[in-house]
Structures are given as structure tokens and as C-alpha cells.
Length: 284
Image 1 (cartoon, rainbow, N blue to C red):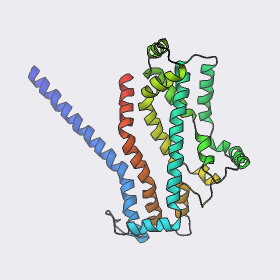
Image 2 (image 1 turned 135 degrees about the vertical axis):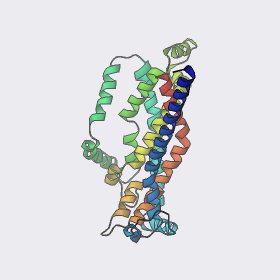
Image 3 (image 1 turned 90 degrees about the vertical axis):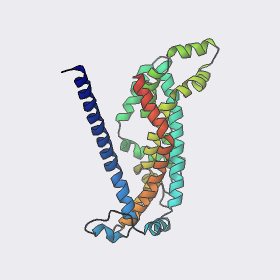
Image 4 (image 1 turned 30 degrees about the vertical axis):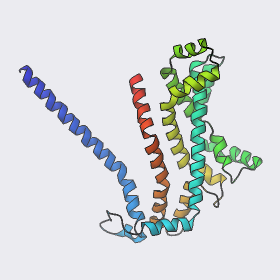
């Protein structure tokens, strides 16, 4: 086979591979977005639409009415505000303290460094449910039950964030750069603020988005420690779904409202997240 034929064959093979890749991505995106789209379809109709055969494929005209019923049934605006404040505070705190701890574990040398890191990672193996009772008793003693402090303070830092930032900084932050900063007279805090934080920004964006989503979707602990009059989004959604007969149109209208802030956060941080992933891939 001549060189020209081999080149043309490789070109056709590459074109076919690209088409298959794009088709796969389109299929994944379609099936990922389908549940969200169908929840909007049901949220825009009445409860009887679920029994229609074939099922409805396009939104109806009851979306605004169902959204209004959501706000009339539960204090959903308060729940949204509580979830935004709690998730935002937790995400910012975890990013900052995890970066600080990751810098210490990755680049500072002190006695017990590895043992403390192993102990921190080992706490990830303990189920959260095992600590619910003592944590609740502590909140009662502090008189924090029913308040947002009970959600924010126990989650100010987590083991996953520490491990994630330690792994990232150990590869992404050159030791020579820190040594150059020390030669220039920079303190450890100055190194963290002026060198470590800018270098950790891509990974911190990824960690912040993951932490925000985790805190936003948390249901069990807010259900235990909060009151129905002062809920988060997930607790309010569980109230919407309660009842002898489930009103799916009402529940999915609340779900669509509760998902909207996550979409906004991803739209704001998506570029940083993708940049962090690509930067990590190049460095790896």
C-alpha cells in the first residue's frame, strides 16, 4: 500500500473515531439532562399528568402556579437563603483551611507529619452516622439546635479536602519556589498567602464546588438538628413530599427551584474547574 493510501486510511479512521466520540458525548449529555428536563415537564403540569399514556414530553402551563404553591406550602425562600449561606460558608472555609493544611502536610517538615496525615485520611472511613448522637448532644449543650451554627461549625474542614489539597500541592507547588521566597525574607504565612494560595486556585475551585454541592444536598444532619420553621432546601423538599398522597408536581417544582443555585454555581466556577482538571492532567 502506498504512503498516500495509508495516510488517507488513517485520516478516515481518525474522522470515524471523532464522530463516535462526539456521538457518545451527545448521548451522555442527553441522558444526563433528561431527568432534569422531565422534572421540569412534570413541575409545569398538574399531578394527574403522570398517569397520561404516553407521558407528556413538553412543559405545560402550570409552572408558575406550582412554584407559587411551593412558597405557600413551606418557607422555601428561607430554606434557599439558609442553604446558600450554609453551603457558601462551608465551601469557603473548607477551601481555605484545607489549602492551609495541605500546604503544611505537603511542604513543611515537622515531627509526626505523615502519621497525622494518615490519621486524618483514616477518619474518612468512619461513617458519619456514628457521630450523629454525640454531635447532637454537643449541639444541645451549646444551645445551637435549630440554628445554622450547628450546620456550619462541624463542617468547617473535612478530611477529603485536606487529602485532596495535600496531593495537589505536593506536585503543583515547586519546593524551589518556596525556598526562593524564604531567601527573599518571606515568612511562612507570607508564603502561604502570596505563593501557595495562587498556585492552589484551580484545585481549590474544584474542591469548593464539590463541597458546596455536598453541603447543599446534605439532608440527614439538617433534618436532625433543625426545626421545620427554619429549614434548608433538602428539609423543605422532604416536607413537600410528605403526605398521604404525594403531589409530584409540587415536589418537582420545589426540586427544580432547589437545583437552580447548583446550576448557577457550576456556571460561575465551571471554567475554573475545567482549567484545574486540565492543569492537573498536564502536570501529571
